[in-house]
Image 1 (cartoon, one colour):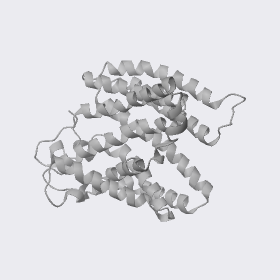
Image 2: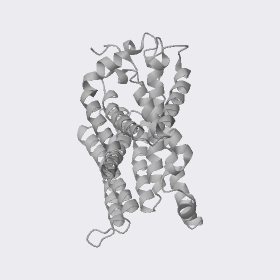
Image 3: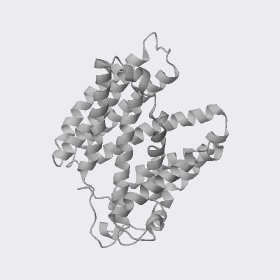
Image 4: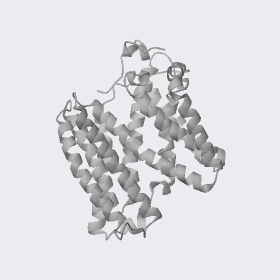
Length: 339
């Protein structure tokens, strides 16, 4: 199946709705809020929030698991409930589907050590997935950026994110570990600070290639995001290491899905979610989150091996699918329009 030559062909003849980039930028407001709260706690509250109020991970908040994590995974996968999309992408996802299915079943039914290993792998996969989405959106806002600087920016940010996550894993699971008598926590902070300083250079270069002021701020906001994550690690606020990128990533994803779905299904309900009833821009804003949150909740309230395997499988497939479908000239990308 070929790709339509005209982007309008993917959604019909109606004008395409645009996603205002200022909404994407507004999500980064979580950074000054989190950093300000950490500074306030240390300067005025004697770290009381860190020691007695804040959880180690946001998953300890019941509402968190209902709204974040799996719901955006379900929402992303629901964009594939489209006959044309399934035909177009099926060859790209056949082997990953089988491979991730086998891994997920083995992790859910095998020994605990295997499940732990798969969960650890998925954790590092999650870090790269969260950052790659923001990196990709930043690149779309640049004007003919130099490839070398783009790669340096991307890989420095990814290495920094993985380093902090590895440090968090050691802090949570091996708090008394040492590397040749050296404190792993301090080594991660020093290494992260060096990478963060290095990241300043490609960030400045790429920001000069941004299309407008909003794009400039967006590029720098991604630098601020990893800086805030490193600060949270250095000051031992693990909840913010996980919370900051997750909020930005998940809400960004939903904004992208809203724009895609409203354009794709504006004239005809290609997707099963929008096949019946009235269609329009507002419909995706209530149908998609309602269905996504409901399905995600149903999948996570059970701890039977089958449901564990399904959760593993859907997450792996989501990460792989997202790495493919939003690249030009694929059909998904033709229905995403940034302002």
